[in-house]
Image (cartoon, helix red, strand yellow):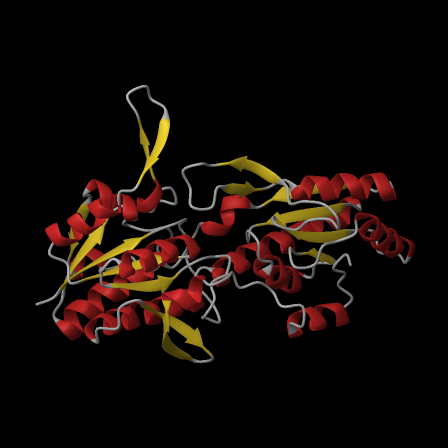
Length: 361
């Protein structure tokens, strides 16, 4: 009997529990594997926190948001945060401890559910001899090698519903509503959510925008009788010649930059350039919460089942990816070679422009 571990690294998102559900049931029913749940991402491998996962342990968890195993985006074992005797934050390489825990638990493989940061760690551990399979998870949809990551569709649904709700208040008060959404350095959430919600202006990192032109576009809408506008802005969007707005720096995280605040910058500029009243709504972690959509539940289930099959086939250093309608194995290296951003020749950009959406360029 093989013994496999499963952990959820990085930030949480809807659909992780659906993966865990699929991993445990596929492992037990199809392969006769024993499953160990590692708690709080790679922190559990460093601190030896784990629990057994039996068939009944995962019953009913598929519709739940978050993760029953806990997660951590500050537990990179190669850059692990610790405090010295004076309480000062320091960093140490604890990767050897991960290998020690792996061997102590007598694992034959480890399934790591996560995004860019988790996959970077998984790939490095793979080169050190650990038998690892990844599962692509991020609301940002910025992992290479897969058409979609689970969590993305659920985040887009929340953004769309928020924009729908804002339409009525914007129309009633004749305001400009600026909606700031997540996505880090990629504009997928803003693009999909903006199109689905009928955004008049969509600002994404891939297309630096001109604040003066954005104001002029909205002013012309008002002159044409459009008494309100919806502006969707990705947290990583930036004006031409300017920088992204950084909210804070988190030294112990894989990606130390925390973006946030560009929505306020855009709203203030619109008020100054048009004289119209503008309000900002930052959706933030609402996009990570709640139950996964049916699409994400199915995609996460397919990913989890395939991950167990990859373990059974000895295909370590790979992850299951969506290509068209198929789930296929792709190397971890391919996923982390660069971030997947919105291409400037994307058909979605063309469709949005043909609907009258402005991208600030």
